[in-house]
Length: 248
Image 1 (cartoon, rainbow, N blue to C red):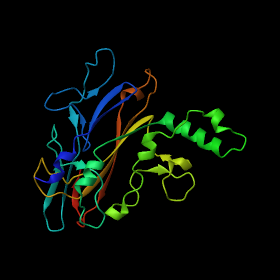
Image 2: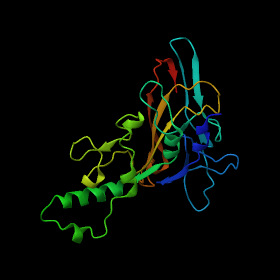
Image 3: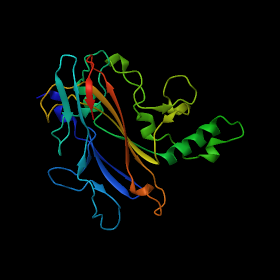
Image 4: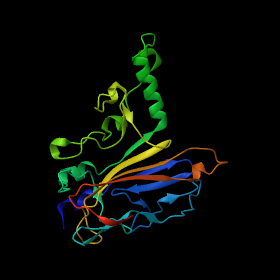
């Protein structure tokens, strides 16, 4: 049993439009096992009784050049193959326990935060705008500050991780200079995971690093938009293997 097993514990909730979804570390969305506490409610309301989905999570598989089939999967609870954090880019796709623990979390961001941040940043660069008068209580959101835009290259990670808007095009994420997270939807939750845990299939990991954005829109109740939740995955092969027959 790898020492990184205890790192997958974080849970967050995304409420947007008429959807309320529970997101678990490692990328699973849905109910909490073994309690069965509902984790995907549509539409939300006074009773919150309608749960069209029990749980969902990625299953990944591929065949190595040597013909070995590898698979990483979720089932219902914490016994999954997917762990937290970015992998190293040296071909070993390794994961120190400290990294797994540091990324046992989520980043939730709102479009209204971006709008306010853009207004404040524009005011700072406008000699005719007094930021103390126009934005007297403004502070950069903590999620913007901790946004995992830049990887720790000294620890072997990729130089860039979470997408961001680089306001001054200097290649460095700095929200104090107008930079901000790049995401889809009106509200989004960002998470980085990998398949190093192997607690479900007990096989050999593929060395996949996953970047997951779960997002939704407020919309109008007259439309379908507030009833929908979207998930965008970016999957990166950090191993030295080349996979064929890759399936999701």
